[in-house]
Amino acid sequence: MSDPVPLADVAAAVPLRSDYVIDQGWAGYDGAQHAVWRHLFERQSRLLPGRACPQYLDGLNRLGVAADGIPDFARLSDILDRATGWRVVAVPGLVPDDVFFRHLAARRFPATNWIRRPEQLDYLQEPDLFHDIFGHVPLLMHPVFADYLQAYGKGGIKALNLGALKNLSRLYWYTVEFGLLHTAEGLRIYGSGIVSSFGETIYCLEDPRPKRIAFDAQRIMRTRYRIDAFQENYFVIDSFEQLFDATRPDFTAHYRLLAHMADIRPGEALPGDRLVAA
Ligand code: PHE
Ligand code: FE
Image 1: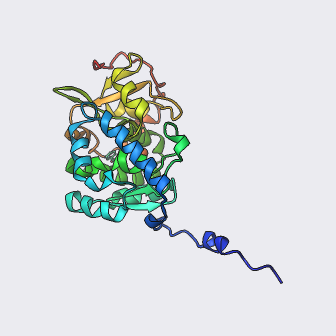
Image 2: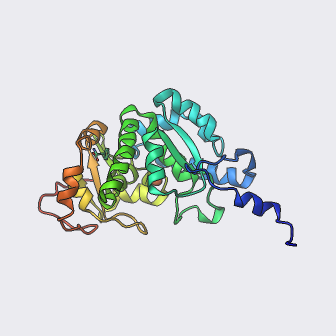
């Protein structure tokens, strides 16, 4: 007869739902985990005025519950839902591409339910909930950006079927994660990967090394990116309307052309690039 199965293993053996959604388990976070959230939240909130775009700051403000500690995704979702019809759902970490796209297409943002440890405040290999929530959710309060991300999800399902994920994911990287916005007051950040990073918030705006290139969807879809260091180029939009309009057309024909075009290296300069001053 086999030994009794320990309870923990029984729980681990429960099959994942096909949408990967789990309970956030909010009551299970301990004081140290809430303290990590508050530390990161306060550090970024001090840094972001005058650096993040006003739409992001406005969204963060209106999501007030986020200042107290790790947010309860259900409470956060109620605020978000009333603003733009999006909700946040908990997942155990990165999910397969098709699952991710189907969530976005249904206006659900999948956020991981784990938070970094106190010794990982500045560097992470994989997004934690501070990145997913603090980085991504405030802009989902903005109606145009909210529609853009849903359209991206639908486009993702199409790109998967056309074998063009490599091209489309660069668009996500250089807009949703690392985008900059031109404003009358100067360059501002809207990318989630930047607003959740202390070091890159300053680097992307002030460091002389990275190129800041005017937005060009086709150029972006040819440009490789680095996941292990600060970016060597950023792309600058003039407005969320511009971003949404430029990505509205059916990309099927674009993908066919792109398949024959060479990749562009991160940081590489092209003759057609319009550079934006920091
Ligand atoms: N319009 C794109 C397509 O047809 C989809 C898309 C929308 C891509 C928004 C990026 C952002 O595939
Ligand atoms: Fe992200």
